[in-house]
Length: 114
Image (tube, rainbow, N blue to C red; front, side):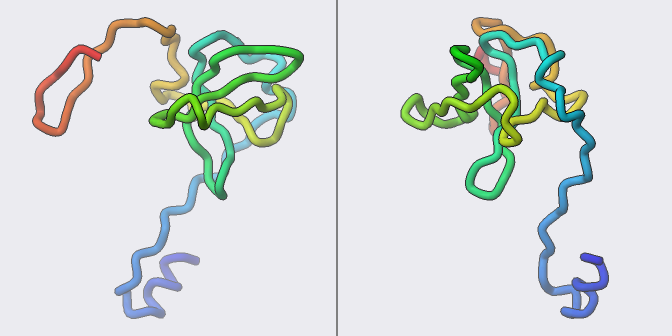
């Protein structure tokens, strides 16, 4: 266990928080509401990243990694094990659309239009 490992090391080492086990049906993509702007998670560089759907073509989705630029966009097969739906209850799982007006709370504790 990570707690035991931490105690063995004198508690000085910070342990990476493990992601809770998620059970995702193999055919989740068949029922997913595929649309431009829909949020997903994509596996890249040994981790899961938030992405949004840009376009669809020939059984593939063009995703953009949140915070990345267009040059990092990637085509992924709709039934790939490298994509999954967002965690239930997260903003990515709500009915957001491209172009929605939002407010963003910045580091200075002020809300800005986004």
